Length: 100
Length: 348
Length: 163
Image 1 (cartoon, chains in turn red, cyan, purple):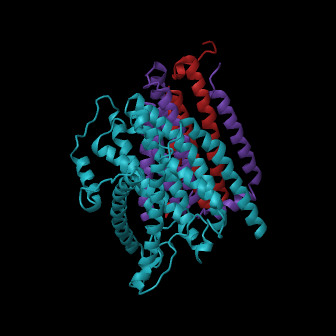
Image 2 (cartoon, one colour):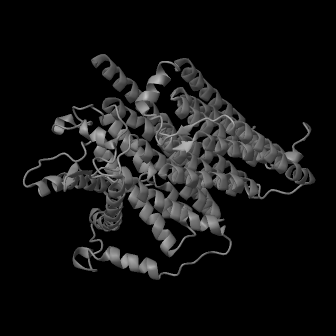
Image 3 (cartoon, rainbow over the protein chains, first blue to last red):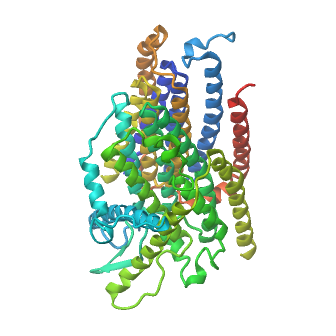
């Protein structure tokens, strides 16, 4: 028997690390991974609340979040590859002008 | 209650004992599959195979093991050391973990406690094996990348792309069986096929012979075996992703490949050939052990099939391999799912 | 007791993986830490009884999406991250700011008296989830399948070489 609060704190920690990495890191791929970390934190909150309110739709929603994360990862990484091909760098600070 | 009629403490003890029995047996089967392969491929090629070390060369795996232990364990200086060491450990660990959910027989009763002949039965055991298979890509990808060499990187990229593509066909081919069985639990899938040879999923139970063919092709590609072994063929890319590995680490990749073969053979016999069914007679001890023997016979049949195909077929070119998965197996698997679900829906 | 022990163990592995993701300079090490986070989250889901979601997390998130990430990192091979002045400021301001934010969230949550959750609280078996997915949530299900189709087409078009 674990208090629900513990699960939510774990979810908040993961989400917080995701935000911290998103703001702190300079490599595009690492920033993208921090977005995935945030999504995972949110998934944990969904499942914890589903168990608390005994509603299975929480777990179904996690399924949808995963699917959307997969679609977003595919397109996002394709965009990153295109950016790398034209600018030869993955550093966000250097991808700050529309002009090459 | 998944622990049967055991208390939690006894369940843990019994599970640990099952693990301690299952893992050495699995490693022994892996070692002797290598012997079987060398003998059979030798006979296909009209030569003897190992025949000098012990009768029929039966001590050859032991000699090989000693050789691997005593070989010089060379770590090239230009590799990424943590990932270089992690990759074979990851491959072998994942390959050995799938035995945890594979049932090899019915139940045995020891002092009033009914113990399943399976380390653990979960509701989602088939999905767990699929999950372990999809994690297996990392061992190969990290091995190739950390080796810091062109051959390794190309070999590992090809192998990973091949494994990821065939995973889709593998998963879809299993859906027909799942629709018929209604459960992901491997024990439940076998128990649905009880009643004789006509009830097996490949024959009258579900007519899943197309799914069987797709599963075999996809599993051969997942385990990187001929005719899909381009990523590790010696004549192609030196040795693919394990070019820079020597002695024990190479042995771990080797063992992981054969352990994956054994897992595929176990899964194929559970899903399509009725698991552990066969004539059962005699005293209770024999009644508990005979199903294990029939299961082992099916696994042996699939290993023999693997080795037979290895000795006979040439290998696919890489673009042929990928086209085969995406343009042939995938539409066929989807058609199988549609037809199976139509039949099941119309029947009920 | 066992539930608390297992939760703490996997929770610690999660947090360690998340912090390692931030601390590592090379993206491949961050990717591997993220895989560790996802694996331990799958164990946490199992503890809450969501077995289907846990296995799907391993198969899709750790076994497919992260493979995509690892592929891209291996192929692009852009090397380690540099420390620029902007990132140092973000580190100095961001980490304490984040701690304050999360502390506020935790303080609000703990005052709610939310109650206990038992191990295996809501068994998310595949039949139950399937029933929900194909009856109540059929429209979102179909829309996500169209979304995946769009993503596939988009990725193929974007990653193609210009001639």
